[in-house]
Length: 447
Image 1 (cartoon, rainbow, N blue to C red):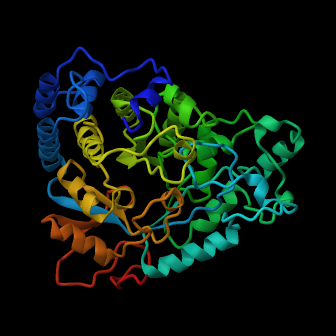
Image 2 (cartoon, rainbow, N blue to C red; image 1 turned 135 degrees about the vertical axis):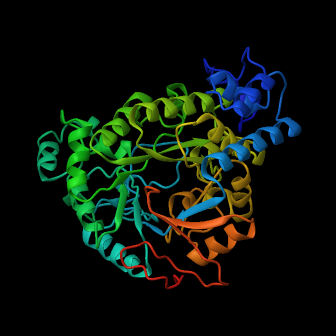
Image 3 (cartoon, helix red, strand yellow; image 1 turned 30 degrees about the horizontal axis):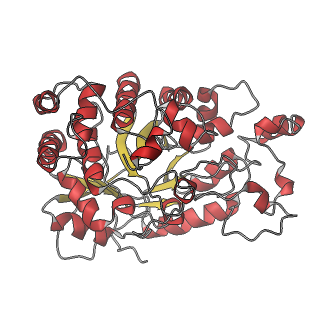
């Protein structure tokens, strides 16, 4: 765990990293390709629950098994996507203790005199940002935002929320109350769906926000968003899919079952999804393994998850750290084991991502020998990790990614968001540019 033992005990979790399985049995099952249980996953993540701490020799054996499985499943290619992050707003009242991205929504009101670093973009501003990035050759725009109280699905939803404005549980305030009107979710989707770009947006938490105060199903919400230009759904807001952990780190967020319902609904209307885990805070290895089981079961039902993304908790400027709930994030050993066990446990998810934003360049590349096969993307603008104290930058051009991947003897491959279209990059000394985006022609990106 990433917290001091005495802090962890305060939460009195029902689930503990103690099993009646053995590490050796779990590793043998993993090497044989047998489907792992939660107990197996817990043993591998802990390198045995029969002792304290991570055993270096056992850890290396887990990493070797995961790297062998990676080579068997996806070979030597390492993929990346040319993409842009365009987060619409930091205004949010959810109060997640692991997050320093959001700004209290009242600070954005016209009458507020509070100075803050937050932002809200109009649909027109979002459209301009995406259009400019298209000229650089991006394939994808990824948009994940705070839950602005004025955000509604569409005009009809806005009127429903206006009529129930006295219900404080709806977390609604009319757009005219704010300095900047974010528009509706539909308007933002239409604005960002420019020139054939792939739009990756609307997490389960955002979809919940987009149907609050109604009896609309998630299928109805995602169908309307798809008509507005949404192409796929990020499986973020998952954090740890165990409610006893969520009650500590994000009590204002949707629960595990609600998150799953939203992802399943997106799949039901034909949208691809991703899945994530945000680990290294108050949870233990059993929680991480339970999370992996939920993702694997969900993929068994939907087949829509294109990649799994382990996200190491960045603690520096978050309430969890500032209030003394955690003393730091995950260790490097924990990071490597999380990647490796994800590869071994998720036998139905082909792609495991290494995030250079979370791990940095050197460690991010190391993860490619621990079971990962995807190296994220160009990003162009990254705000969430940076505002939590992340230190690894917010942009990599295609040349950066190609040269880093080639430096560890792997094959750089540009991909589409859904991994169905790929282009091997022919190494010629560079510089390199994207080729798959609607306006990409191989011209190198500029910072």
